[in-house]
Figure 1 (cartoon, one colour):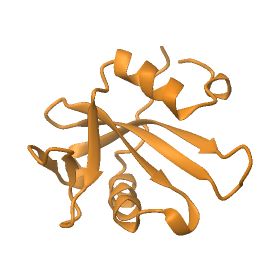
Figure 2: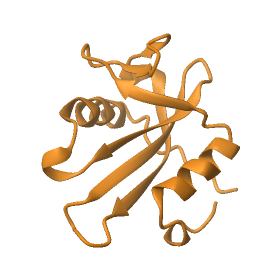
Figure 3: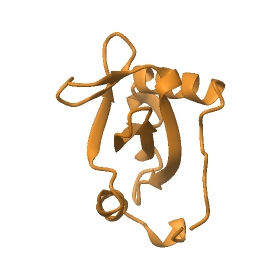
Length: 112
């Protein structure tokens, strides 16, 4: 796995993850399920595994922080979902990912 300190920008990390097969962009629906942006596939917390995550801090403003999750679904879809910290955070995303973590399905990291 690459050193996360060297990956300073969200764009660099997204580009690398895309090359590694994380091609789907996910969101959390109003019903609290993870879904593809086109709403073609939906998943509950028990159908998701957090593979990795990356935190980013704004250079000029500490309130400008975000986190990017690399996730894999039970049917093999791989993609990313992001969220902000602080007052701009999406509570639906936080709640969903907390449920995934509570199920013990977070960070099944393997060294490459």
